[in-house]
Image 1 (cartoon, rainbow, N blue to C red):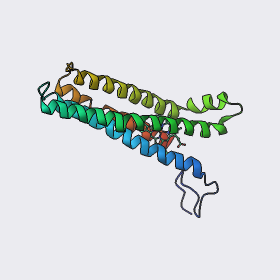
Image 2: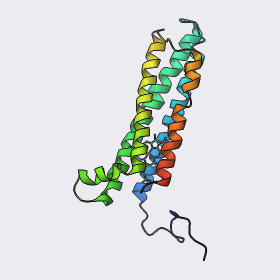
Image 3: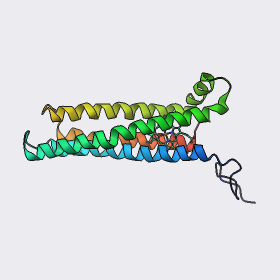
Image 4: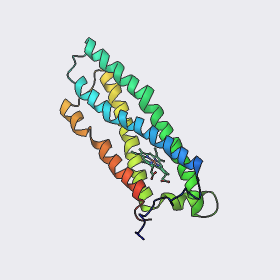
Length: 173
Ligand code: HEM
């Protein structure tokens, strides 16, 4: 018989269906997709925005796009990703011991989870940095050149690669 690939569910259905957990995981991933889309798009808008003359119609249009992207998509998506992510930690840590906090401590200090959470903290910090930059654009006080916004544009994606591979491989146990 050929060796089974590690991590695949048993053929013929899964003994524990874990519907709620898997549902929350799916919704978590959807929230993350929306959050990431905004994190990748906003610096691109900033890059184009640097070319607009302050007070011009183009400047106003970029300001509206940036404000709506942050307020309607990015802020809610980040909050939902956090709430569902913390819920996943809460549910999954149950298998890591007794009591309330000890299992959570044991789960979040797994090497892959520490890596994932470092990425999450970076993305959250980056989100806030972008929100401050948006206010500076609105106040015509941006000092960063177009090149800067183009260069930093890929940072969230690099973080996402590390984070997604950390959760899918669960390296280090
Ligand atoms: C906002 C705070 C976040 C927290 C607290 C959090 C926490 C978690 C936890 C505990 C899991 C369950 C792991 C499992 O049982 O498989 C999970 C799944 C996942 N997370 Fe997050 N996460 C957050 C944000 C993110 C971000 C920003 C990304 C991507 C850039 C991401 C990508 C994923 C993916 C792809 C899964 C599914 C992994 C799998 O099914 O194997 N998460 N997250």
